Length: 324
Image (cartoon, rainbow, N blue to C red):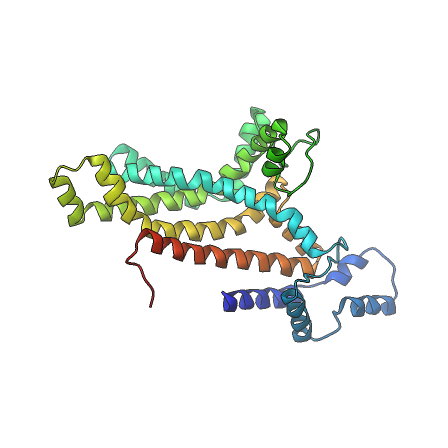
């Protein structure tokens, strides 16, 4: 994990400084300032030093728990992250709750009904789900369910008229703690469209992988032996076939979970949701280097932790899977 996080942060650190313009230009745009004042601004932000000195100082502060201060808002970066990260977690978790159970169910049933109409339907749906641009799907769903039918909201996670006391900044958890049932219903009402859009590609991947894996397992000898012994078909499918078929599927679920963190950037921007994705986009537009670097660090750590948990889960599912 350490080399991955180091390389990711280093690449983003350098890339941010290669983009034309910088935080000084973004902050002084439209303001009349002398070259001497602009240079003092650069010195105050530490941008006059070589990039490796800047990176070394930033990494040292990160290791001590200091994420720096936002150039745009002048607030601590850790405060910005603690305020926005819970909303991204809620969106990703809701998308997984849609993608994983339905993906496994559709994949298993398609494998059991191979070459049927349902099987062809699931295969076609998976190809469409992987190929469909998320932004296009989001706009089409907004046009249908929000503009034409008026069933679902187009932006935000709560209506402005709904009051909710922030405690953990997880809207659902805060609503449960304060027993604000109006906020709970309003939160789920706003979460429908973004979670469906974000779950589309993972759902397609999981369905295809489960179908393929189940077909391979169902052809193995121990499944045929179990059926020959008179074991009920439901038990054969759930205990003997599905458990072994889920080993490669677990890896895919772990991979798509990491991808959801990146996919949330586009989804949060389209639906105007508070979260790490929108925070990162706004920081890129304003050249807010400390926030950009902190967001990428959080995403890299999240992806690495998900990969680690995936490896552990694979060993729990299959005790024979051991690493040297």
